[in-house]
Image 1 (cartoon, rainbow, N blue to C red):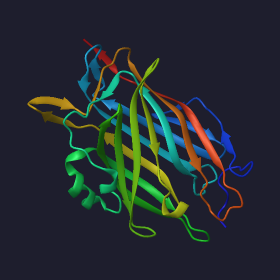
Image 2: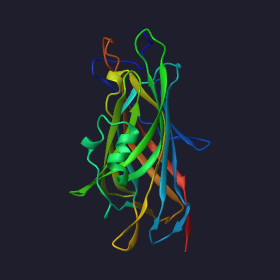
Image 3: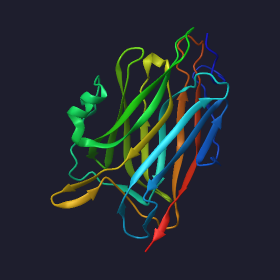
Length: 267
């Protein structure tokens, strides 16, 4: 039986440890028990106006591991607040429905919702069944615009795995404006159970951004300004679960912290 990945205190108990991120090279590191999350990202271009907004692309990447070298717990939910100096504009963008992406491979998803793509990247998922060696699966990532309604913008992050059986994994992300001091965008990401609970995300690298024209006006899916030389992102909580159904108890661990990345004010 594979080694347990986190310390379980009681059935359904939550081990909640909050660590300020520790910079190591470009990575910010969050840790609780044996679980380690490395996060990085940034905005391009780095030189941006102080007051007005300019088109940008945003890169987000992460790595998940277990200090024992075993199969890590699976990320199931992430609540992250982003800097108030960034904003999202979906005006005039075509909209894709989550139901259009279910059970579709990458090429099929692009055929159906290709005009709604606002990001792309790659990821790695590890599938670990009992009494078997883990299998690492590389998977392309495509981000689709789900539209804005009632003050909330929706994204669908689609990937497709072929192990143990071909299946789509669609993560739903909702974004809303907030007024929380430094932070102006609040996001909630819901990651589905992968391979019946045997799959865990090992890494991801995604770039968000799209320039387009609507009614003769040039627009950008993401715009930002640089008022004081840095952007902040606050991980309110990233929830990981041990989905091993044969374990007598299930455990949950929660990570939190802050990531700060530089920008260059101009003008």
